[in-house]
Each structure stands twice: as structure tokens, then as C-alpha cells.
Length: 270
DNA sequence: ATGGTGGACCTTCCA
Image 1 (cartoon, protein in one colour):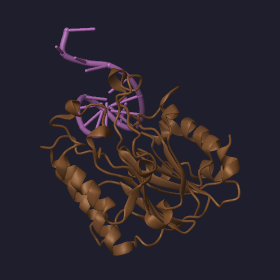
Image 2: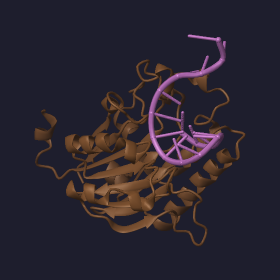
Image 3: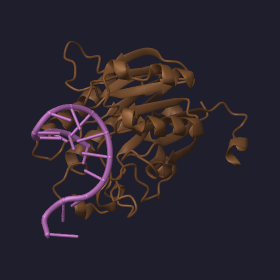
């Protein structure tokens, strides 16, 4: 345990993201993980929970304020914060056309504009959902253009459902004709990055391959290390330039009732 | 053997 000593005199904000695949099913794992890692901010995706079912009190007892944008059976995103929840905003604030799904929520936490994002899956390149996915990415970019400033601390975290490079999947040949690796999806992802965001994990570990954020439940994918890197902590330069530590917590995929995604975490001396 | 899992929900959709 050397590194906490090394950074003990720096103000650190610890930010995490986790697609939990049902917060009801995952609550024991989430509370355990919060107690171990003690993030200041946790972005949650796929709560699969109605708005009024969110365990606000239970998180409050652990010291977290929260904002949930819930839908019910599908989707649902939330932000937990020990450093404040200011200007909370569900969805995209671009007028009178709300998204059909609860896929993004925003809040300012400790001076950082934070988004918890769950990008549509796409299903297949021929599916209407694939076009919805591309449009959703464009809408996120437009929201950033209109409402945020990359010279200020901004962090967009979540499940982007895109593997940006071939090395972000265990075997690119297994993805022929599939979503998550097509050029339009990758272009849409990089269009978000190009607004002024840094893939914090890749920046810190440019040569680290084989450490993925998602492993399909089926076919023994996890123990065969057959995963994909589709979850990201994207931070604007004022934040990303202060990165001290980042983690893809593969251990969280082990044990009883894991999510199919693992949590990501980063420490910023901000 | 051409499937393999898991979550929501009620019979099938979604990832």
C-alpha cells in the first residue's frame, strides 16, 4: 500500500464508472465495492430501475448524494457523489425532444461537470437501433458543444458500446459483421473524444492490451480473457493532465453475481 | 450436441 502514502498530501478526487446490469441485482456488489474503493464520484449505468425505486437513502447513509435518471425495465443512469451534486440534469437539454431512453444524466460534482452515459448497443449494423446509436453519439457531441467547455474540468464516463481499436477486442475476427467495431461507430466515438476529451486509461497505459471492461456471461468468456474494452473515463485536459492512477477492476468480474462489466476508476490531483 | 448466461418480467426482449 505505498501509493496512498505517496499521494497523501495531494488533494485527490477519485472518479469511477460501472455498468451494473441491474442495480437491484447488483446492490450487494456495489455497496461492497464502494466501501473498498471509496470513490468520490461513481457513475452507474443500466440501473434497470424505476425512478422512485432508486436506493437514495441507502447511498445517503454511505455518504453519497445521488441523481438517478430511471426508466424502469431498461437502461437507467445515475451519479453518486461525496463532493456535491449541483445543477443535475437528466437527458440532453436541447429542447422539447426527450430521448426515448434514459441513457444520460449530468451533474456538477466538486467543480467537475460529470456525465454518466449509456450509449445504445446498436444490436446489428442493419438494425434501426444502429442508426439510433449513431444519432445518439451525434447528439452527445452537440450537447457538449452547446453546454460544456473543454478548457474546464469535464468528465464523460460510461458504457460507450464501441471498441475504438482492434486491440480493444480479444479477437477482431470474431467481430466480422458485428457492431462495436464498425468504422461509423468508431468515427462517432472519436468525434466525442475530438471535442476535447482524453481516454484516461489508454493515455496512462498506451501499451496495455488484454485488459477489458466487458466480458459476455456466456461461453466462459471471462476466464478465457475474451473481453472487449467499451467502457471509458473520458476527461478534459484540465482534469486528464492531473491523472495519478487509473484502474480497470477485473477482480469485480469474479465471485458471486458479478455484472458483465467491470468498474473503472481514476484518481485526479484536482 | 450448433448450445452454453443472466436480468427483467410472465413469454420474450435485451445485452
